[in-house]
Image 1 (tube, rainbow, N blue to C red):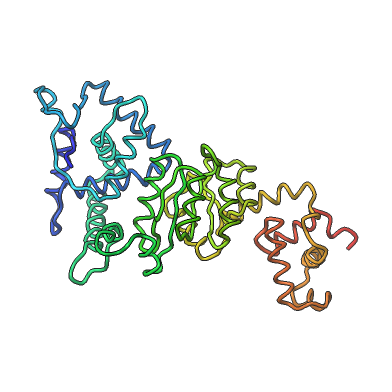
Image 2: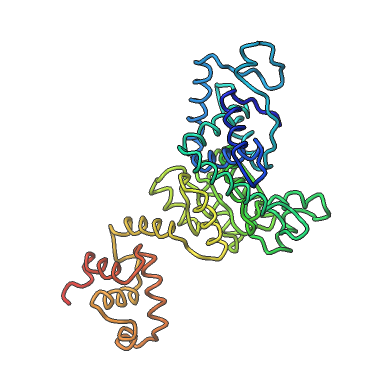
Length: 387
């Protein structure tokens, strides 16, 4: 594609390239690094949109308005302010950039605005030339390692291109390669693009569906093999809670990770009760997203779910004992009194394995993660009274 860079940015990039020794580098490398950094820094779409709007307004106020990219530069001053530059972006960067532009409302933006914002952001992040050169070298080596060659492994982007090479689609490919099939349910196109870009960087997660409503998610899972669903909770039509419940009831093998917009206790509680195995707030970083999906696919409850269980415990705290069975209450009481699992098993006439099972259920119901917290909970809720 062709991007319009400010003359200052154009000169800065070429000075940077000229200073690189021992490694071939181009303007595209610098811009790809800048876009990756921008996406990582502005994981929140609200923050990114705010930064992009400020960028556009700064350019308008300084009377450096770039023309539409499809038109020719006819103004001499504009020719001096901007330079056309041919660049190559990865597919995920191109899709993400276009999604950012399309999400802008009430202010005309272009891919060049996003690229110029990314370059300014990159320059501000690296105060020294040495730091920037190191980051650029790491970026180039990552791309070289991912590039297809006679002895190289398949690069992540190869999954998309494989569709036109005899493979019948992502579901068939996932079945053959053991990839985790992920469905993204989010009604904001920009957020979906960011999620997709992060997952496309992995080698074990394959996005098989991108949907904007709960109804579409339920229908998709009914007809397409799915392992994990990342579900937004507040959507038009069927909301995320109802969609989670419908999916889990019809397909208990499918794991759902809730994706709330903000830390709303009742919304998170409702998602967990509907069948979500975990949740992830939208201000999470990409690594947390990948970790949560992988954990859900393995049937694990990551750290985020413990926070949800703590919220459940807050509600259960109003009636602390009614959520526990008699046996769980007995086991918890003995834990509070300092008994070991083997001692509890002998005292109650059950196996040590059964004690561990009761403790696992109890920990989840009261929202704790270890024996010390459980003992404190038992004391606070009167289980040790009269001991």
